[in-house]
Image (cartoon, rainbow over all chains, first blue to last red; front, side, top):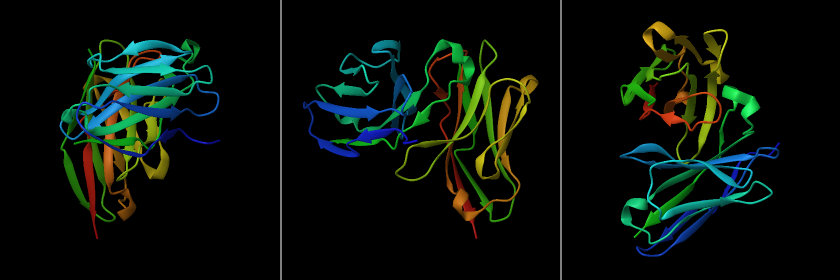
Amino acid sequence: KAGVTQTPRYLIKTRGQQVTLSCSPISGHRSVSWYQQTPGQGLQFLFEYFSETQRNKGNFPGRFSGRQFSNSRSEMNVSTLELGDSALYLCASSLGGHSSGGTDTQYFGPGTRLTVL
Amino acid sequence: AQSVTQLGSHVSVSEGALVLLRCNYSSSVPPYLFWYVQYPNQGLQLLLKYTTGATLVKGINGFEAEFKKSETSFHLTKPSAHMSDAAEYFCAVSEWGNTPLVFGKGTRLSVIA
């Protein structure tokens, strides 16, 4: 079974621009979560989508947004980029149903490395 | 609120020596605990997880971890380090269901020949 895929793998943008990152989950997984990884703050949760609805949200400004499509693929968008948005953005997928309880393991993609100049 | 503390941002061991990476957590409910490994320029790979049941959990690549509720710990061990184990290791906790993972700051493991 194919793993989580993320495109593009690398991006370079300038301040003020916007960017869209894409994530394709493992087949059959309905939940997609996004995390930001930086050297200073470590791994921080951005948001989670399940069945096209945002189910959980982390503590990030409104410039960070996302969506999920009917095929479970997800995109995240960052508007008005700032230097501090430079990071590795990781997507994780899981089965997502509440019946799976605590055994709902998240599987991560390789990430998109965003550099803001 | 949940939190995870990983003691030691960098651990160095000799090849063949015991690997011990420490993780302590806080959670208001029985936690679900995970260890992930990250190799350079890659995403996170699941090593092992604790949900319920047996407190000694075996994972991939010879790693194992023991859940100790009384010590709120979930330390990761491997009897004999290999050069290929050099990577960053993250401990994570989540509460019931589909709550987001809360990660520790990570421990970089170096293996010396």
